[in-house]
Image (tube, rainbow, N blue to C red; front, side, top):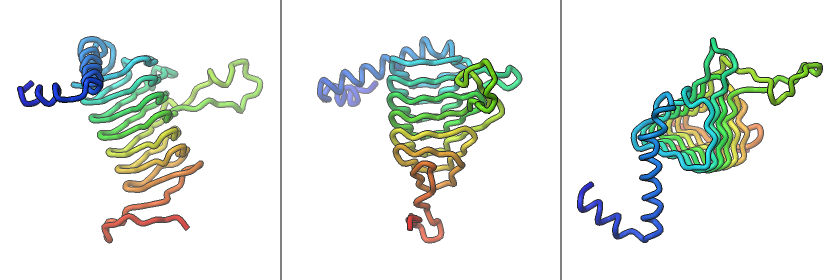
Length: 212
């Protein structure tokens, strides 16, 4: 650390210094502890407690990832022939109380922001057999699914992304939206079910409002 950078840190308000110290501590914890259990755990990444992490050996964390408190990341092993995979790219921020569960594969690409209380539900609970003694919550399927969040996308507060949805690059998902189908690059979606309401026109070099 240079003296110039140290000087900038010292000049910060005390509260900001405390927050920065906490970030450094959780980064150190990731480097010394989490990397032993995750499939990979990148440089300068941090997870804030409390948390629930299930089967971290199937979870890949990139560089400079920040995951805030209350996160629930579950890689669910349903069929050993098709192990789950949660892959989080570089420079991703996942805010508080986000629920991520994958029975199949979930890829979150670089520079994605997932805001508070969002859910990525990469699996399903079959309910058609009303005679099954297994409760619906324990019935799982989706081992061969692939769900993707494209590079540079932003998921608004409280949104839900369902299994096999592929969100393109630079997509904005509006708050409280439920995304049930794939979304093209450079677009904005909102609603339940979510629909494209704005798209970027590359020829005209401008965003076009698709609402009527």
